[in-house]
Image (cartoon, rainbow, N blue to C red; front, side, top):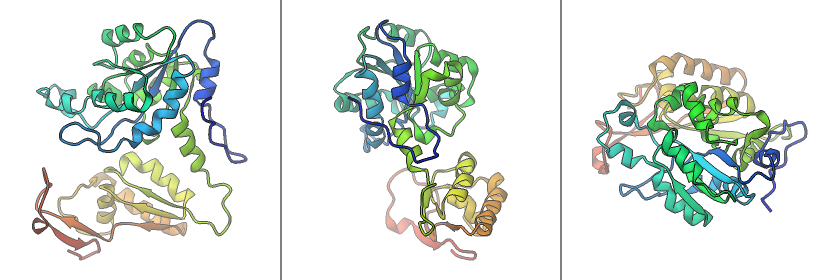
Length: 324
């Protein structure tokens, strides 16, 4: 039996999940192919070995629910930012480094299932690979890196149709990318019947965990958010300012907020067009009595390092107006 889904708090809207989708699939016609958006954007070392497999482990309950129900799971994900592949400037190095083929050994280890890989995410290669999946189900097919094709991030309809062509149903279990209007996130489910689209165990657990409606008056919730861009996190940041009492901002996006406070950040990552928005968010947090925490210091160097650096080549400075 698959594990039970997280319980929803009273009044919280129940989301259609993978178990609902599996129950809605036509019966008695052989295995169906369930297209699953996962987040396998995992860190790897220079040899292509995965150094943290937690994102893969997080998707296992959903994958196992599908294959143990007598169906096949077709997994799609992005990995990294393969801009050279998209523009045709890659000599094969970036494609090799960011191929989802790297996750196959770990996926086999964690599931013990028949795991296959296809070197594209749409087109004839995928069509052939899907046609060879077992009619009795139980197999996993991993598609190649979605972002090798620029149409993924642009949510081009023809690309979404290419992805959906292999799907009898769709499940989103990539919480970290669920806010993006990409083809694999919003384009594909828009093309399929709603009863055959749902969320996986990982997304369901995150949705249930993020419900704060039953907190006591004295309870406080703190959220930590990072990443490089304010622009892609803006709806999340705005939502969290309304939901939590303490919001901690880190990662590259913190520099945009630092500049909004008049702090010198040198050539550090900054979205200039979002500085004014950052000022408004800071004021919004203050007006609502929320605590917005930013880094108080940082380590700097003359340029962004391409490899390990010695401590002597860096300096620490305070992230305060006039600090340095």
